[in-house]
Length: 208
Image (cartoon, rainbow, N blue to C red; front, side, top):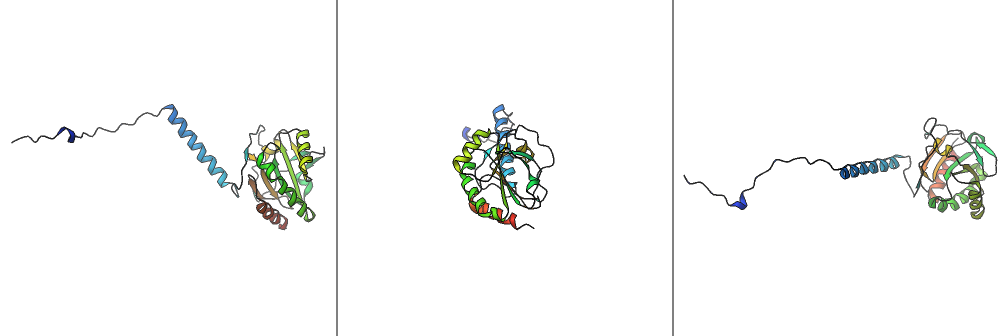
C-alpha cells in the first residue's frame, strides 16, 4: 500500500496551549483598570449620581462616627464662620439647611456659586439657610473671594478638613440637603445645575 504524502504547507500541527506568565506591567494595568471600574461604580451608586464636574479631595483627618446617610440625622459638626462666630448644624433646627463643601480653587465650585447665591436670595425668607464650608483654605483667601463675588450666605472654614472627613467628602463641590428636623434628605457629589438646586431646595423646604 502506498503511503499518502501530505504537502508540507498542509501539515498543521496543533501545539499545546501554554499560559504565559503575567509581566509586572500587565499586573499594574489590570489593577488600574479594576480600580477605575470600582471608582466609576462608587460615583454612579451615590444617591443622585454625578450631575456635574467635581474636584477630588484628599482628606487628612480620620472620619469618626457613622456614615452620613439619607434619611438619618445629619452629624452635628461645629465650625467657625468667616465672621469668627462658632455654629453647629443643630443651631439651625427648624430651618432647611443646604450644606455645601467647596473651595475657591475648585472651578466647578466657582461656576455654581452665582446660582447658589440667587437661589438663597429667593428662598431665604421661607427658611433656607446655606452653609458653605471652605475646605483647607485661609480666612483671608475665602474672605477676599466672597467679597469680590458677592456671596451673602453663611460661609464657614473647615481648615483642618475635620468636617469634610466627618461627612465623608471625597470631591468638591459636595451638596447635602438637611430638612427642618435635621435629617439628611439628599447627598450630591459634583456641581449642580440651577434646575437641580431649585428642585432640592423646594423638596427640603416641603419636609414637615
